[in-house]
Amino acid sequence: MTAALPAMRVRVWTRPVRIAHWSIAAIVIFNLFEESRDDLHRWAGYVAATAVALRLFYGLIYRSGPARLSWPSPRGMLSHWREIRTGRVTRTAGHNPFGTAMAVVLWSLVLLLALSGWISQTDRFWGEDWPLDLHAWLADALLVCVIVHLTGGILTSILERQNLIFSMITGSKYVDASLGPPSEPKSETHSERRSALRREIE
Image (cartoon, rainbow, N blue to C red):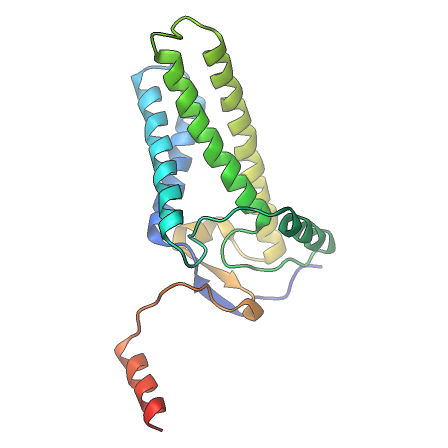
């Protein structure tokens, strides 16, 4: 049995997060199938690694809401696994524990691929087989993780009864009412300020 229909739709993914996400995704897909190992392949990898580094930096300085950098906990992952087994999952603002863990793995693989690709081009390791072998192994691991990530996104969308992939385009998703909206700074409109002032006067 899937969860009940969500109570509210809120904005959870900021524009920098969405730009970083789809930029990294596009470059990763391009480089996974473009194996010429020429300058375009190498520099595309460096751009992807730079995007990951900027996303991590953004997550560190953005201290509120789902955009902040967080790490999965074993307890949270176990709790989410139990929810999956019952067919009733909590619609959280941001990634669920498995999604958070996969994001960390994907970011790490992109950075390691850029590093191993750079090492293979240095004079010290030029002609060595192990940097290229490591690079190929990391690329295969990244491909597997991308497939798992997409599969998990589709299955979670079914459980939550919402399109999570589309949510990364619009920035909005449904969140259970009991959790409340994500704690992100929000500017008040003129009417909201006027209503708040009226309440204070009353």
